[in-house]
Length: 262
Image (spheres, one colour):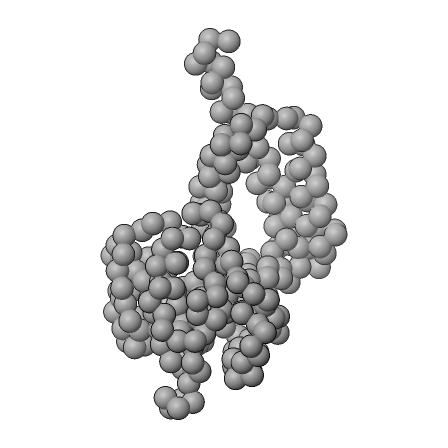
């Protein structure tokens, strides 16, 4: 695609040791983006070299958490529109067409756009349950959005209305089951930190109810059953995740009792 055909768009992402994922991500969007911004942090692989092959502007920064590092990356964008991706994501052709149409129309009433994200897991695309459609606000007018939320659970905050674009953003979240399980303690500890900050107290009834509700909602109400065995696994895992997170609070309370001698 010639420079004249490219969209007035900055493709922005952060990356740590993502040399294996970056080609798939950049192949899906680099051809129609005027500018590519990649913010790296302490990489020990060829992440920067891969990004440079696609003509990206690479900036290295110390890690400051997802939210703040992503906002640093946003600050380097110079184009009127910004598309924020993760290195393990891929823009499908249908979504690419929708993004192009949206930007070319340039409706002044919209400050951004969101679209569905789908996960590849256990050999198939997950199309139901708690994991889909996972609406993601990733396309923004420059100066109209920033990453908010918490350091590890960030979300885009938009100054103005947003539109919905058809098409999926593919997400290759997990290499395998082991990789999936690796993230459970990390997010459970973060969850515990937030509960402590709110002075929350553990409740057996609430914990049991949450576990049962998460499975029922994911598998039946959100039709995870239609995703076959992976759908059952995800629903069961969502239930166990709730049990694990809230039991972390129980464990924390028991430790404090032992330390205080009560």
